Amino acid sequence: MVKPVLHLIGCLALALPMLAAAGESRGEMAEVGDAERGALIYDSRCIGCHSLAANRIGPRHNDVFGREIGSLKDFDYSEALQKAGGTWDRAALDLWLADPEAYLPGQRMNFMVSEPQDRADLIAFLQQEAER
Image 1 (cartoon, one colour):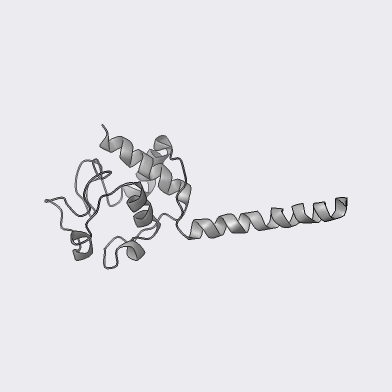
Image 2 (tube, rainbow, N blue to C red):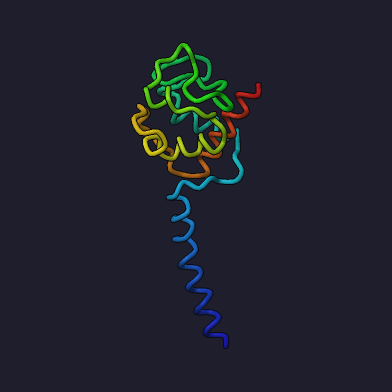
């Protein structure tokens, strides 16, 4: 009886990482974000095109969480974003960051955040900044 149980445990140990990776590749959200870690990710990955306070290559982000998609009057959005509708909430930001082109074909952002936890941390940071 011990051998079949050990075999089952061994199979599960091999299968769980693959199942987890499959979930991540579908763009599933991590449950909890760490805003402090998100700030570090923002500074290392996003700051090249974005700023919290000013429009750059991309629009400013200080109030992106909760803002209507494509709504800044002083930024030249792609047609895809101008027509998108909706609000930048947790779910929309997660889909956008996971694969902007899949979320809104024709957009101009050529950057993805593949790791669900990194996206959750960035979103927590952006939500924190919007609440200031």
